Every structure is written in C-alpha cells, then in structure tokens.
Image (cartoon, rainbow, N blue to C red; front, side, top):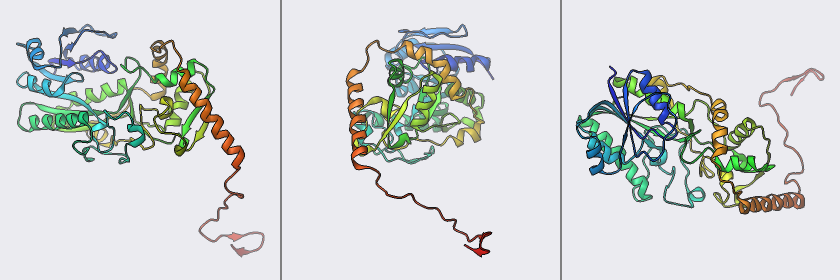
Length: 366
C-alpha cells in the first residue's frame, strides 16, 4: 500500500536509483540529507535539508512528520532508529560486511596485510567480528543488534541490508580511481598478486537500489530479515581489472608476483576492492534471491561502461609517480629473479586417467 516514503541520504551512489524504485511503487518521496551536494534525479521529489547525525537535529528536522516507510542509507543509524520510532511502520536500513568476522577492520591502515582469513560465501549467519578488534566495527555490530531489538519490540518492521563494495558513478570514493588513473596515464603493466585470484563481492548501484526496492515491495517476506546483496556475477581481481580495462579501450600486460615479494596493501591498484588483501571477501546472496526474487537490473559490463566517463572526470590531475616508480622497480626485480633462477621444475607433470582404458594399437588395457 504505497504512501509516503522517507529516504535518508539519497545523493551518493545508490540514492537516485532508490528514488526510482520508490516512485515506481507509487510513493511520495522525501529525501533527507545535508544538502552539501546533489546528484541528478529523474523524478521531482521533496528535499529536506538537515543533519541526520545527531538526535537534536534529527528531532528538529523530522518534527511533526510521519512516513509509511523509511529507508536509511546515511547518517548515524542508531540515532535515526530512535528518532524514527513512532514516525514509520517500516524501517529499511543499510549496513555493511565489515561486521563479519575477519572481514575488514576500518581503523587499521594495515588491514590489507593482516586481515582474514574469512569464510567464503559467507551467509547472513556468519559470526560477528570479535568485540574490541575494531572500534567502528563494534559500533556497526551494536547498530545491527539495536535495529533487530527494535523490530522484536514492535517499534517498526525492520529489513537490514549489508552492502559490499558499491561501484559506479556518484560513489563518494569515485569509480576505481587507482585503476582509471593508470589507464588514463597509459600505463602498460598491471601487477597482480598471486595471480589476482582474490574474490570480493561487488554490486552495481542500481542493483543495490533494486534490492532495497524488493524489500519495500514485500513487507511480509522481508520483515525481521538481514540480507547480503551483490551482483549475480562476481569476479576475481584480475577478471575485474580486465573487464574495466576492456570497457575503457585499454589493454594491460599483467605481471604476476607472489605475495611474499611485496607487502599487501603497499600499492593501491594491486589490491582492488579497496583493500581486499590476499583473502577472498565473498558473501552468499542466496537468501535475498530465494525470499525476495532478486535478479540484477544491470550487468557489470554495462554499468562499468555507463560509469567510466564520470569516473575519469573525478580523477585528480596529478599522477601517482611514486607508486609508478615502485611498480616499475617491483616488475624489474621480479623479472630479474625469473631470469636468474629459471624454471623451478625441469619437466612438466604428466596426467594419467584414473580408470583403465583399452589401447587400440596394442589391444591391451592401460
């Protein structure tokens, strides 16, 4: 039953597409944000400018107003949850995967070198991070638990979505800036660690918004649930770089080095997915597909192509020359090691099928 919808945030990667989802369902939408910047929107909606971080400002900004559904993607969710009690029957919130054990320590600058290992295809019931490991992660876990407690106490019907890396235009971090900078600067070599085989969940902004739209449209099925979200197709780091590289009309020559040769996290472009490190960061999205019928709205290749021009526009004019120098030194050193050492094995391994088969030439079973 459409009515009024409040979207907290709305001016970053997923906001304009969440508005699309809500308007398509017939909601009268209010976007509540600080007003420091705007993004293009395809629909005329009301903008409520204020500060969604503090109880005093939120109480002032939302005074006398109620909504049928509130979607919280920005601000201090713990404080917003308290202020939205009695103002909405349904609460859709967005968190992230760092709450999962070993996933990401937000305050640790060396996390890429020290984090993990973590579960592969981690489900929504994968254990929380241990308390005290990271202050911000502790707060994220407390927020999830507070939201679930509010649902069980009947303050609202909750659905909570855990975002992975959200890619594409309007992202406050840009679109793969380290990678696009190297493409812009016509760098010929891209260094991968351990073959670039690390898997990390990503989701295109319209697909993340569609997941929220499905939760809004199915209140009974989604009530009280936590959902991981991600594109239907996921990629290794090397596959992701190849995909972006190809869509940009560029072609890297990949040089693979072992992780023991370099401190993981030393060079931003090598780690991809903003610090994936040497371990996979892959979540299961089976639950939202089964319960809400999630399918991608856009393919990764199409959304990369859509986002490239915007991504290039956001790049700083300066080139990271120190990083390039380190990369070149690393490639030269690794090439020298390979020349000096030669192949580690003198002959190739031979494969033998585990079952006996007749040899037509001899009539024997071999």
